[in-house]
Image (cartoon, rainbow over all chains, first blue to last red; front, side):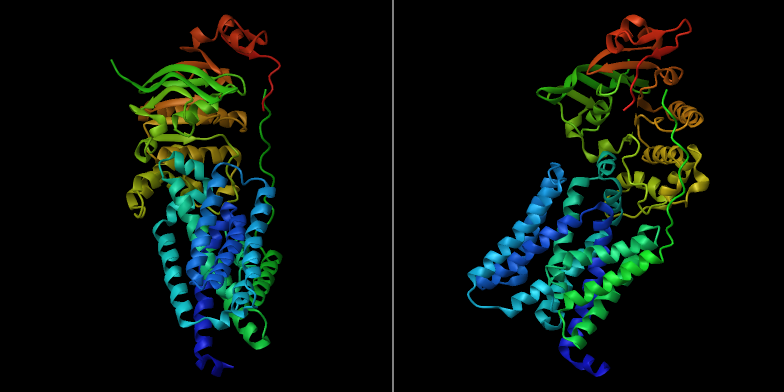
Length: 278
Length: 259
């Protein structure tokens, strides 16, 4: 089995899956705690639409994905601020219309493009050296930003309005956070694919949430599960010749259900009854 | 003569057709403890949020520290401690009492810097002031409502503010805890010389603690020492016929629905 690690594509796949596992897990903690999963869904489709357009116009796929991803996430952020994203109808419309855009671009291409479908369902085994450079570069940007602004982002996840009221530039940092989510999604497109990437933002962090009580602990456990699912999924994808996105997400889901079963978090005992008002 | 630290000048808030606060003119001097009373929906919370610059006025002006509230910069906000209404926060968020209070220090620490030992000390001191020091490592979600309130007061204190804005700090906690919280706030008022605005719907509890009461129902009906405000003439303008003031100055509000 280990002989295959001599191959360049497997080494790149391993490296990419570790990086993407870490990224999705760490950003996923903020997504889960702040309830931003819907941002991931629409943005993933938009990023894919960017890739499709890139193939159509013979431009750089990652570059277009970043462009579409950031634009979408900023529009979504503005809508969240105005309070207009609370309805699941608006979310549903956003989610489907971005995918419709992607399908439109695919429709304009008269020829089936296998590489494009790799971005849809994940094909980590086809990561090229230049892909790896982009993944590592953007990934580093995301991780450094999270490290630098960790305490403020923690406060924003907990209570954004209070953060703003206490003198933190919360609005700016919120837009930074969602930009980092967009970059994470773009970076993960190759491994997990657009259809499933937002699952990777959710599942490792949600699994960790079942098992930890501190945010640092949640990050560590999330990374553990994220990297585990990512690397194991990659190997499974190779051995069974299945799309890597499916393998990774199904493994992550299995781990999630196990964690729910064995979660040490019991239902809290009833709090002391609230005082009746006169 | 001291200058007012907070100044509302004919300030109105809301939307055309749905005015939350109507031409409020109010001056608050440094070090005053003002209780803001009025029925539900009278705009009391809006008043506090306006001070924080979270809601711009549709006419008139609001100033704090000589700065227009809608133009507040981060360093102004850092001098205002805020306790919002209860039950807005997710208590299951993975955070300990210590970490929750430490968040009050972040604006002073600044971006890109880590909390120092001095910050940890300030947090511990704030926890001691509110009597929650032994719960420092407890997850926030494990505490009772009253305990969580005290933690959030500690967080506001950890900011080391000049002004403290408290929105219904005693709602939803039992009677003994209400008294404890108010006595704590009074103690802080005296020792730290804070300027305090406290919103409450419980008039009687607040009377012994405040310098002045501001009676609010979209308009400001009175802003004076409790004895002058708690008269049938003035209170009935806001509460209608459903109000009674006993000989000892005890106020009874009838048919009162708490939202």
